Amino acid sequence: MDFVNARGHAVQIVSPRHDGAPRARRPVRVTLTDIMPTLRMSIPDPIDLSAWPPHTSTTIDDVVVEGLSMHRVADLLGTPCDWTTTTSQVGCARVVLCRVSAVVHDGDEPIALVDCAAGHIGADWTHVRLIDRISVAHKGTFRVLGDGSTAHARPDRPAPVDGAEVSLPRDLQLGDLLIVPCPSSVAPASREPAARRAPAAQV
Image (cartoon, rainbow, N blue to C red; front, side, top):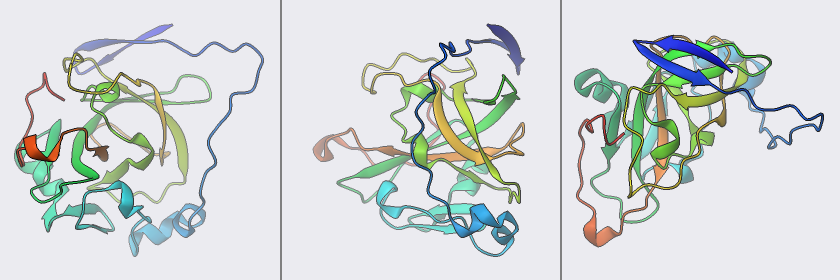
């Protein structure tokens, strides 16, 4: 058990217990940019559009939702940012933008600390993407944790899943901007379209 300071916040890192049994890992889909990361300089990493809001597209360093650059949203509104689409009535209707506040190398699996309550925002972390920077490093597995800078309790969000294992470039660094889709948990009749920075207590 270790402690690390991340932008003024003492974060407790609890390493998983090793009982001798190998830990099962999900199958990894290998893409051309995984094999040759330098290709990211000219083509974007593949994206599963079914996991993202309608009218989502990608560039080599950005995700565009409904014609709006998400890294530009982060520049204007800051992070963490909970962005809700204006048109989606079913499926994914939200994305969350957050920044890496620290990368902790803890044994074989590094930990990425982010400035949102990572396990409490209803995100599908298997689809997280690095934007606003083109990395030509091979990908590795990180465990994503909130850095403690935002409140965690949200009665309207799913149960916490802190410590999600994600695939991100191995050169992940302080300040990197991440975007992750959030499956809709709000009924269409009650959804209020918004594109805003959510208060720290909400993300």
